[in-house]
Image (tube, rainbow, N blue to C red; front, side, top):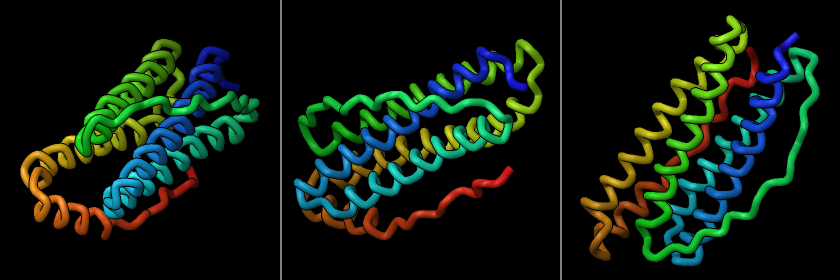
Length: 170
């Protein structure tokens, strides 16, 4: 049986992960409207990943015979001043998610909930990758995306990204 605080924090994380998917879908829609289909593809895949992260947290609660509480997902209310704005927002959002996962880990560590800590290890590594990918995309945009030809080539590169679903077993 999981600690009540851990259950609450994981349920909150489910909502955060689903919001992340909404946010990235909003970014994808912005880029699609701008005819940057590669950028749209990149963020559509990010949305799929975030949805799967939420499902992993849900499955963890279920595997521990705990109740999943699905809360309302807020609508993203962002305005995008330029093509780089969603990229910067994505990095800041990933940092927010990282802090949230670290908060759950801290709570599990305090009560010696080794099962939850082991479960969260994958997410800690995943967040390092997510932040790194967001930073790399910003750097590529800064290097190549400021002129039409460079933006076209970067958009083409981002269009080649394919989705690799995580293993939902543990």
